[in-house]
Image (cartoon, rainbow, N blue to C red; front, top):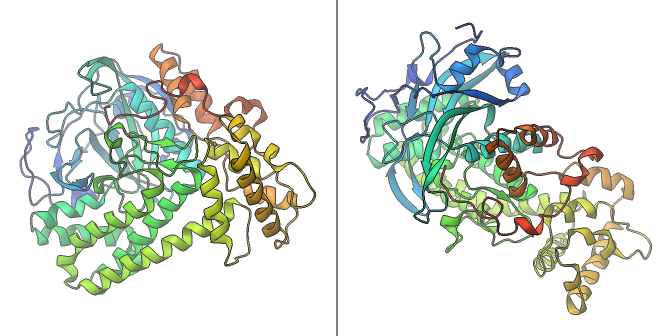
Length: 521
């Protein structure tokens, strides 16, 4: 193998391994991972790769090599490396699910490049001891969605795991996409994911659930040593500080989600990164119509636990479960509860600050919260596209008697609904907004520049991803490349891509893959 990687494995070198090395489904205790070998794909083919991550890993120019294809499809292993799957548990939809783990993800290696440490992981590369009844594979459609979204989120400024490459496996994968009893074969694929670490809340919960304080302490100390070393040598006080840092990072992440209208869809504790990164892109989506009650997950259709408007509160609930796991090391409730209380208070302030920024308000006034609440109320009275609305609002004029409704007209899915009482409510809000802008020193042009750095023009709407998937199923990967390039500059005007600055087309309203999605992959 000629890939020039500066290998520096530490997870598998410093943490306890599962002593059983057979790749059989089992309950794993007193260990943080299990060694496992990826499944060799039948006929791997590189579909796309991220030039930024290639550069970040020191692999520029290697993407066209046989070695690159072999390693990042799982066909071959790097010399002197032992891939592994991570052990973790989690609360799923509010209930403890016990052991979960990397059921279709295999960690290849850890590398250092230009002072940055990266873990490289294959998703969809075969079964592991944590696969339960599944095959550990992934289909092309979900792999395209993960690949595109990882990089799109990064360029939106949202903390996230990254994606290095998307490779078709040549395997056909048996899946029941709609969970309706009609499974079929689909094309398989593998995504190479990259992050400083793939540790999740559930990585700590599983050891607490087993009352394995020894392994829990080893893992927490490892996490502090390599990811929170600035906190100092592990102690009870440092464990508390560690939890506080995780709280801050998690809050920052979810406020970014709310800012761009992203809905994760599966905010289980096993999908919560200990580094505050967006992780595990399953049934996600961006708001089309602004709706606090929307969830992209068919599994969550009835209870809407993970709906857009509840995401900040779900993070708090998940932090509570992490606090419960860390309690056996800290043995005091008060400091943990104080951090949870701080989150509850600060996330509300952070949300208002974020919404003010979206509205172009730099100074703070007590009535801003009311202005935001009134906007959210009128936005949800008719179907109003979130991305278009906030982007178009940057054209608002704070002086004069312009018809402000015309400024945002393109954001309405059914403009004819904006009549009577609803029209009056909109005009009332515009007057309040106009009066509020009089208190700002910025000119309309300066405010527009500021707002357009915060409100993206382009996001990865589900129908856009589906167009890429439909084309890729026919071995046309041009749409993947077009969207990949578009989403690298989501705040820029990009007039050559203006067609993507549009509401979801009507044909996509109820089309499979364009609205709600299942966890099937």
